[in-house]
Amino acid sequence: QVQLLESGPGLVRPSETLSLHCTVSGDSISRSDWSWVRQVPGKGLEWIGYVYKDGATNYNPSLKSRVTVSVDTPKSQVSLRLSAMTVADTAVYYCARAAGHNKRFDPWGQGTLVTVSS
Amino acid sequence: QPALIQPPSTSGTPGQRIIISCSGSNSNIGSNTVNWYQQVSGTAPRLLMYSNIQRPSGVPDRFSGSKSGTSASLAISGLQSEDEADYFCSAWDVSVNGPVFGGGTKVTVL
Image 1 (cartoon, rainbow over the protein chains, first blue to last red):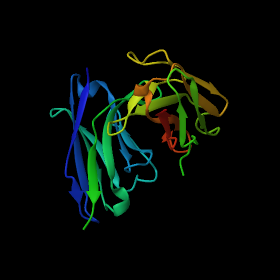
Image 2 (image 1 turned 180 degrees about the vertical axis):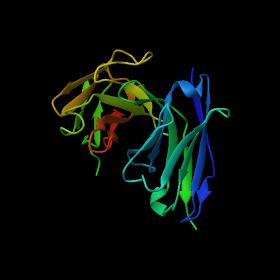
Image 3 (image 1 turned 60 degrees about the vertical axis):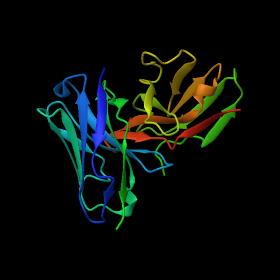
């Protein structure tokens, strides 16, 4: 079965760029679409963006100017870059496979907490 | 303000049936299918229901979904202590060109 594991810095300074990676195992990364979702602790879920099998991307309009989602097939990794980080970007960041015609999230990685602080 | 509206909390006793509502609009639930996610405290969300009524393998048939117009519901029959979690609804929104979520409903088993 597919397993996802996020990695990256737990602490980012304001105005810096966040870089996270999600390592996919148990299936070929090139066979699926992938996504990032975040959750402010104690709050709801927010979709960040998709990268599709054909390499196309689709981003949340509220984050579009700052986000890049990409796939590194040889490394079997999905990556997220989010620039100009602020305190409001403090959240748990999850990667997930986007499955089916309605791009449901299944499965999810365990998530990684990113804190923005000086 | 979440695009989909859920009650913040609900509760029930073991064995009881509870229903969680999810209200949206024509741009999301009204024109697309609904997915539900379960998040046990301290863990990642997991897909609980998709395409309104479909259960992924491994999800007990105590869970059922429905949709009518711009609203959807998740029912849990025979409530068990392990069902204590946060539940989030989600649907594709054509105005965002992506999925939107409800704010989540915390289910407490008394």
